[in-house]
Image 1 (cartoon, rainbow, N blue to C red):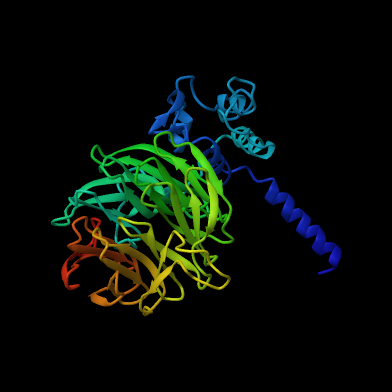
Image 2: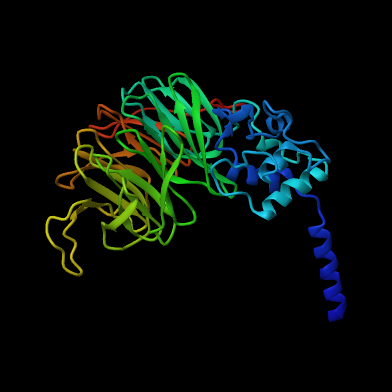
Length: 443
């Protein structure tokens, strides 16, 4: 084809593409999720308006329908986001860009249709035909419940027999981290939908109700952790930042841009005044949690890091990742350090059989559990580094490992979708179960 013809064909194709009607699912919903859903959601229906689904968006709130198909400039949402109606929206935040306003306006002009794929709108409990990959688990502080991250939900189990107690359905496709408050009154779930949004869910687990949802960025968030005082939650994001939020209000407190790649895991210090974030840039970064200021790197840089856990009673952490070695560090320097020195390094544990994905510290501080791409979870004496036991039985990657509050059991989960409960004393398997109901398949 002659070059002129090629250029003409390309121009025609580009014109056709750009002339396509705006999409609710592709264009409008991400704008709402980014700017509006923090206040207009089931847990916080400001003005009676819920923007988490097309149906509730179309219904509108106490001021009437949010939009009238074909009549963009008369629609309430357009009038509020342009400032024609006061107060301008989003309230207390920067206005939408001209491009974002144009997307909403053009979508309404084109008919305001819902083009969401069927699987995007959750109309009931998730239906499973095979076990989900388990990325997160956590025992309640009293040891009676085991929370397991599923697909678009957190499943609460009776820790004694594995029976399902509650299913906490949310919007995020993936739950990557779970954390309980010390009194068990709050459960935090962090995750999101890849390439769409990150989400922090705040639950009242006793009532089974979501009290708050915090939308963060345009991709999944990682390593959500709750401060011991229950006041702050921090997460890592794919733009290399760490964000901190107030649990009571959902308000963002600050973001930190000290990482050079994705932060994948976080943990607070004992007194909630500091936290550590680890990530793909190989660094374990110590942060002042009250001021939101980066303090220093805890470690010497080696391989990418994906896991961190803290001693339950003192500011000592264990980190691990692609180089397969768990490193135990103090957060406080015992003396002035010289270049090339690692005075904060306490010890190294054995090299694992694969990359490290998850770790936990027993409630008494005596045992460290290490899980990853290897076939077993290894248990180590935290003081001597001696290997105590192996928890075997997984057929693929192990992405979550947690001790029960009494330290007697270790729960594991991963790629094969099975929850396994082991005796911490000797690593023997006590029970295993699929954490979700399966349809058309054997459990």
